[in-house]
Image (cartoon, rainbow, N blue to C red; front, side, top):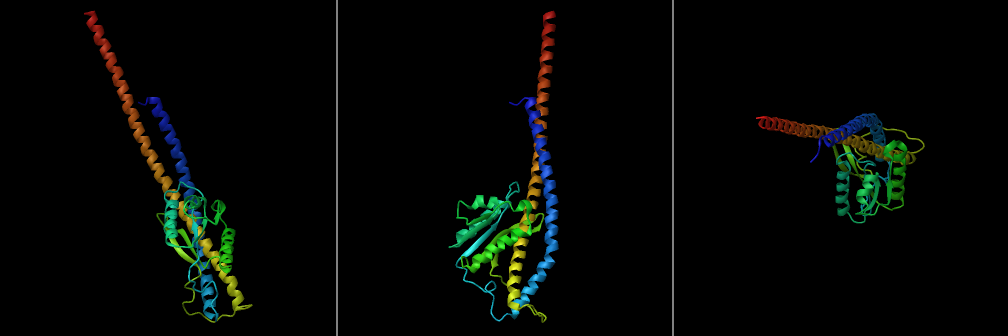
Length: 282
């Protein structure tokens, strides 16, 4: 049975934990706003690049390899997770969705972004490459590096298609694992476009534009995943704070009950001693 000192020590420890979870929630909320603003500010530029690519794709007589359908017999799966935990079910959901997809596809090759994804998936499938610690200081160069690997492997026919599983961000309370076919690029030839002149040539421009478009899409996915991670961690730390506060209330109640029992027992001992003294005097 605990004594009062143990209760006080436990309550102090839980209160210290509350300070930590509150601080982590505040940090995650600030990072969430920052990454969310990046996603919002980046979308108009990405939309314009996609329109330019759609126009070029509609004017080129021969389809570009990165725009042409493939049999998808040698797919590559790129999984976007996080490097840190304490973000609720964020990484668990990504790993489970990836496991399901891996079991459904044969001849699959696997790459992972994030330490947690590697830890969850290395036991079920060989991982060719892991990109670790990029979310600590995420910048566009990471998207460029990943894009180069994806395109080079596609050109060398190491894989004929690329699929990406990541957490799509809708709002602070809504973010779900999503799978997208990434390469070859689809849905860019729809619509009518004004006549444009491209220099030096349409083919040379489209090569660079496709590469840049894929870099932008990788960057968007990394930003969305990072934003969803911060949102998940903010919610998890808020819930942890609430649970710790409830624990403090319960421990305080138990401590007060124990103190009352101790006081009552001492009063009974005093009353019993007084009654005994009275009997001896009579």
